[in-house]
Amino acid sequence: MDVDANRMKYQLVLQFPIDEHSDFDALIDLEDRLLRRIGGGHIVDGHDFGSGEMNIFIHTNDPEEAFRNALPQVDANLLPNLRAAYRELEGEEYHWLHPSDSQEEFTIA
Image (cartoon, rainbow, N blue to C red):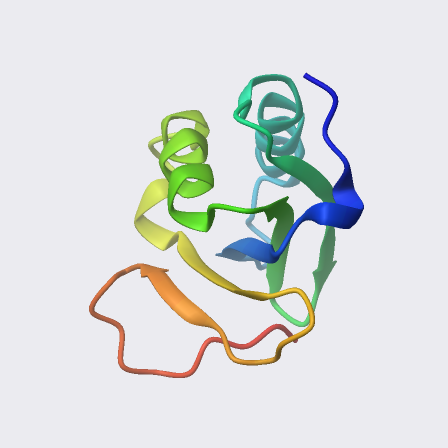
């Protein structure tokens, strides 16, 4: 299926804390798996590292489905620290997906 990134409405962010003990290779491997397997018309749009976190960005029209598709790709050792939220591409307010009961503001450093 040919997917037009310009028609996507949302940006899903998968976020993981990083420090000197973080396994950067595991995080890059996750991004590679997502590129190959997320499917469903979702587009992995890259990652960034910095300020104690790594973010993987996914453009989608259905952030909840994209998250459901992405979740099985996350290694068990990364899962406890996963934070996920989405926003409208033109918006600034993030909406939590995981953990779903978080009361703090989701930010990208």
